[in-house]
Length: 484
Ligand code: GLU
Image (cartoon, rainbow, N blue to C red; front, side, top):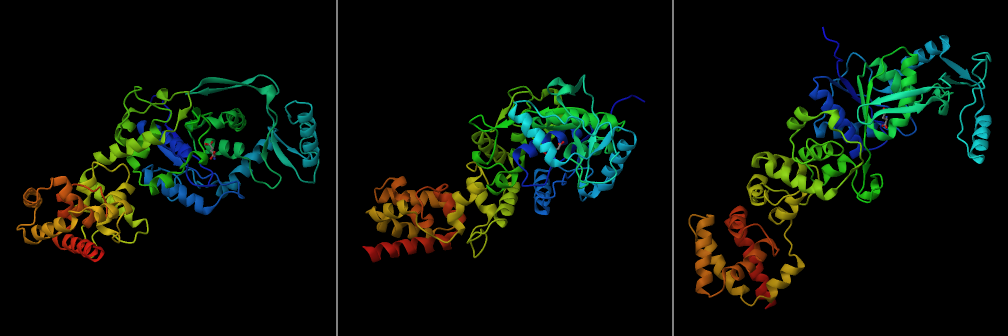
């Protein structure tokens, strides 16, 4: 037997809101590392902040993870040998871990009043020094038998704690600059640093992969794990994600939740691809990856130290590119699902109108988001309306009445009704009327779509069908004659 570590990673979100791109990137890197190493990926819900945690957020996070395709081997809804996987259901574990540390003298009860601590903190602030708990209750540990207390971990006063970080290398923290921090609050609820460390130990997590902002917590968590006699996992702190103005990515920069991107018509392949490049790269050049390619090429060594900038334009470009790579029937399926998620006043395929599968080939190359499908083909199935610009063009076009009458004749008579035939017959009529084809088709385009720009005219007439095309041409002709 070798002594390789069984890779076990975890994603440990606090359910206080939607899954943001930062959290999703953390989840993805933990997932990719586990998958690339044949290890296990754990989802753990860190809901000890009961005032800010909500059930709705738990569901949102789970639904965004499922949408991205980041499946977990252990966690909510899945179970596993180290469950339960929600911290509020693990209270007994933290309690017994704290009790054990207390009995072994590695932790002690602190009866200092919040007021006394606050005064000391204020005094430190006024004198411009960092406040560190002075260890008042350290030696009399547990002597006072009654009154509210918190539990503090006894930490070294000198020396240093080194975080061996797989991204940043060794990061040394001076123990003299940290104090005996609280592991259990007076209400019995464990602090984040305690619960996370107890869980990482109990769940045998081998690699803690998370955002840079957690680096200062790491020495504390290492102290907890060492006090518990556990094995300190490897750490990998991922670089910060910035907005285009170089400040940390936040709502000010626009969409930041996975759900928002999904509802704007981004597809999971592009989201995953883009998130993967926020801090990781294969060779600094290759930009397009499938999930399978990421699994086979992902390594923590290739995670960079520098902050990554979130670039919406690049994500949009990438989304278009992944949409083009989808087979037509797959894209049609995605569009169907997308349309089903939003209230529209009309849907493709109803009332003799062309269906999604008929329309996708017309716009597949042009779509950058699933939402573009509606923008580009909505005139086929949404309640008919002229764009202002299109209407005035139609009204100003002196050829329009004659062209519409001619086009009507061709469309009504042609057999079979196909794009090639439509093209040659309409071209012939345009020649006969001595109007350039482009000009000839313009009133027809506006009549059937209400717009000046559409997919190819003959494909559009084909998709709309003879009957609907005639109906719309007649309506336009009627409008022109009543105005005229
Ligand atoms: N629950 C923490 C958070 O959402 C993450 C903890 C961790 O990864 O250690 O920020």
